Image 1 (cartoon, rainbow, N blue to C red):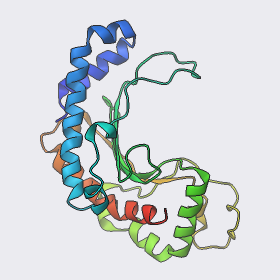
Image 2: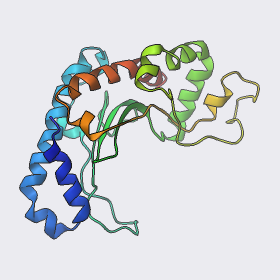
Image 3: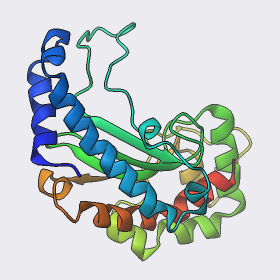
Amino acid sequence: MITATTLEFLTDLKANNTKAWFDEHKKEYQKAQGDVLDTVVKLLVEIAGFDVDIATSHLDPKACIMRINRDIRFSKDKTPYKTNFFAFISKGGRKSPYAGYYLHVEPGASFVGGGIYMPETAILDQIRHQIDSFFSEWQSIISDNNLLHCFPESVKASGKLVRPPKGYDSTSPAIDYLKCKDYYTQRFLSDEEVTDPAFIASLSRTFKSVNPLINFLNRSL
């Protein structure tokens, strides 16, 4: 499970983001990464209980966790390491185009959610077609009480088009959602929530609430 020690490592890394410091504290990193891996292992078991796609995907828990090394090739920020742990669980693995569940662990800025973020154009087109064709079902999913209990803001988007996407009329009842560039839920967590012994059980309930949304998005693909 994630502990105060996990968060302490990330705090220290943020203050000492150099390869020399990282190499000197490799054991602390391995312990912190192990805490996150243990969390993902247990989450996969929990999610498999209500998501058939995850149950049959036989995902490697390690492959669900993003690398801590930053890609600095084209960045002005040359600090070598991310100061968070990020896990993404989807039926095709974290590099697949499918919607899934995610957990971001960062001191004072952890968050959790599910959906699809900034998909490629062809995939976004398929999702928009799905929403337009089954809008009543979409409305039912995003207004479900279980979803809203865990994610009061319901579905979010990183951005929206100014005009309707090609092939859709501005009078479509689904137009506000068709303009979205992605579809996901998000809820921020306190450090106390993340390190609570009951965190896995709480996270499982949260992910279960967003499962219908993920199924709907993946059905379009």
